[in-house]
Image (cartoon, rainbow, N blue to C red; front, top):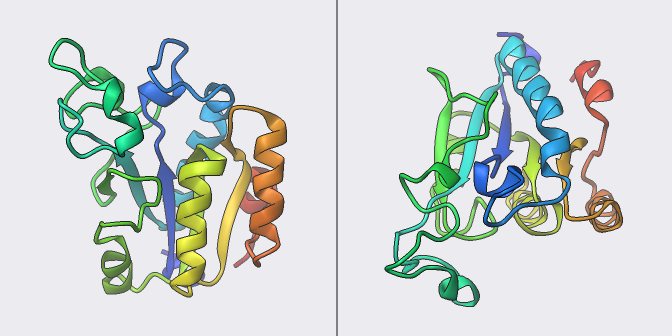
Length: 195
């Protein structure tokens, strides 16, 4: 591992079938288009020896652990979005958790909320976060704001390996994150970065 990357982690957020596929229960319109860039970001991170953290939503079949505003999507008759063990909760094709990677299950927008992410990252010497995935105004933004609040430095969001329902929503949220000191390179710029 390159010395300069040993304190970094790549957070791959919610790249699951229910958010990415055309028939996904919570499809993000821009999600499918970023899959190749997320794959390349993961490959680059692996080459650099960067810890990869797969942040996924997995919910109880009855939705007992989901936000109140989404509970109506879960019934005994049908599975809700990203129900644990169901196809919708699986990573989209092309993304694979490998030995040495870490999977973190969350039930809210932020990967830090009610999880052990912060302590896991600290115990692994991580202070530099790179974020990819969906969706920019929700899980990406809340995770990034929490990372900044926890004093991770730098925090980077790869702009073309993250997505939202529309380009305008994506761009507005990237603008807000940039204004709190978050780096927002393209994938190509990040791949050329010499931390």
